[in-house]
Amino acid sequence: MADAVTKVYRSLPSDSLVYLKTLSKSVCLLLVLCVLLGSSSADNVYEMEEFLKREYSLTKPYQGLGSSSSSHWDLMGNAMVTPDHVRLTPDLQSRQGAVWSRIPCYLRDWELQVQFKVHGEGKKNFHGDGVAFWLTKERMQNGPVFGNMNLFTGLGVFVDTYTNEDKNREKRQTGTQRVYPYVSAMLGNGTLSYDHERDGRPTEIGGCTAMVRNVNHDTFLLIRYIRSRLTIMTDVDGHREWRDCADISGVRLPLGFYFGATSITGDLSDNHDLISMKLYELTVDKTKEELEQEEEEEVTVPRVDNMQQFIVVELEEGMSGVQYAVTALFSLMGLGVLAAIGLMAYGRWKEKSRKRFY
Ligand SMILES: [Ca+2]
Image 1 (cartoon, protein in one colour):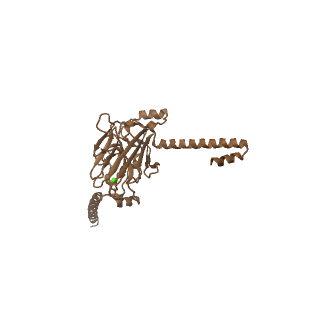
Image 2 (cartoon, helix red, strand yellow; image 1 turned 90 degrees about the vertical axis):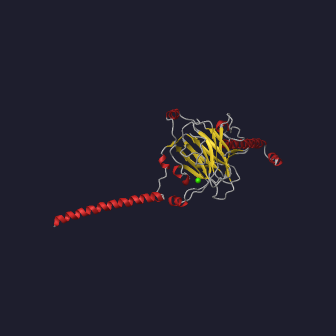
Image 3 (cartoon, protein in one colour; image 1 turned 45 degrees about the vertical axis):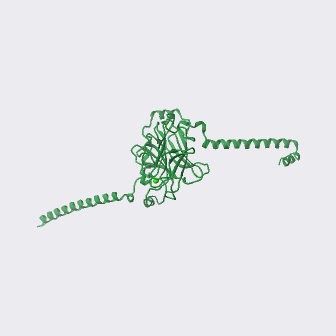
């Protein structure tokens, strides 16, 4: 190759030769620059080390996890630490496990990158229940919502691996069927209940299908909260590429909540492994007005602006058996009363007519 280039050089006039050399140098420089830029932009996606907040992050070898006073994280339930992961639940029935940050988070704009793995012996549709990631007021509570309490206050992002929703009802109401595993988000205010039987659909603010189970490559989830906008992305195909999952603006989260990860198994089970949770602080250029507004409008209860758009209104055909029975009973009673009044009125009218004509 070098010989061929020299030959070409030799057959050219001397100023063309200088030009060619300069050109080849420029191309080399450009290539080096491209490589450098390429790698640094890839790093920006996954490795923003300078913004990593270690106190809110959990990474191998999980030194900040445990009972010592210097720990940043608490372990609870059946969760177990190994050199490679924190196993929230093993592939066994009726287990619950969790990790919770000890330090309340006072960052306004942040990004949480989670690496996790869901795997087990169960065949299709015979595994569960999934894993959840949290930023909540409460911490270290057992419960039915993927191993955390119901009526929680804050953000929950669920990786639900088992369909509980009645398939017939779903088809009737939406005409399609959702593919599981499914990632969804909920914003709890302390009174909103997660409906396990419906996979949380009545309170869901966004979500997407994510085939995370029993795959050979790494699986990631990204939760970004910036300027009150919540974005969820997944990387579960092994392409090292984020894919949009949910994007909700006007999400108001109070400060001082705790990050956590929980999981639960019931009749069906899976290994739910947490490999890492990396929390990055995002620096956002905000105007003076924006900063003042943030200070003034301190959020105390989580809410979504215009929450009404996320509340699922049940259609008539979506009524439960009990609702049907009660509605039918009251309708019959109402009809009976109406009929009785009607008969009485008719009787009186007839009596009056009789009096009038005879
Ligand atoms: Ca479910």
